[in-house]
Amino acid sequence: MTPFDTALRVHRREVDALKASISTEVDRISTLDIKARAHETTLREERALAYSMPFASDAYTARMKAERVRLDEAANHAQGRLSKLRAQTVEVYGTMRAIEGAAERFQDDAERTVAVAEQGAIDDIAAAKFIAARRKGRGQ
Image (cartoon, rainbow, N blue to C red):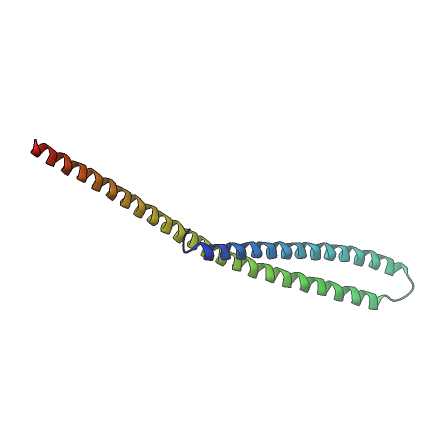
């Protein structure tokens, strides 16, 4: 356990949330792309039919063009949101990695402190035994 664990958990959750948001935006972009292709196909089919019909289809064509513009704008907005989410993810992930490094260094320092204390205790015991043996040797 380190003092960095809470911050690390918060950043991991934030990265997970950003991953989910990115996935949602990618799905939205994919859906808009499919709709745009279907719209283009429908527009081509309707134009072909319009040439064979005796009435004007200008209003329909204008509406279809407006729908295409709306789809393109929605796709551009989704791409913009995706770019922002990716940039935010890079920043949060970098912070998370820095916190992980600090936590690892803290843990290493704590382990080193314990090892130094253990070695000191072992050295003290050895010194005490040496002194006791020396005193015993003088007393004989």
